[in-house]
Image (cartoon, rainbow, N blue to C red; front, side, top):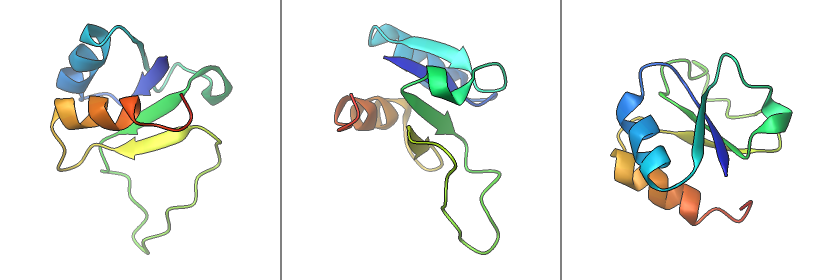
Length: 79
């Protein structure tokens, strides 16, 4: 699995790599070349709109531990 990680989520990046998956920088990764995206939630829409422009799974890591993010990725139906 190839996962795009938002800057500042180094603990999540490390956990993803320890799980045996590839972690790439979100800023550098074309979304059509990743299986999932993990973001910090800092850029949430102020109106609560959760519409995404991609078919890949997007995980908001806000309030989750790195292990919880990995668990959500592992349970993903998109895998």
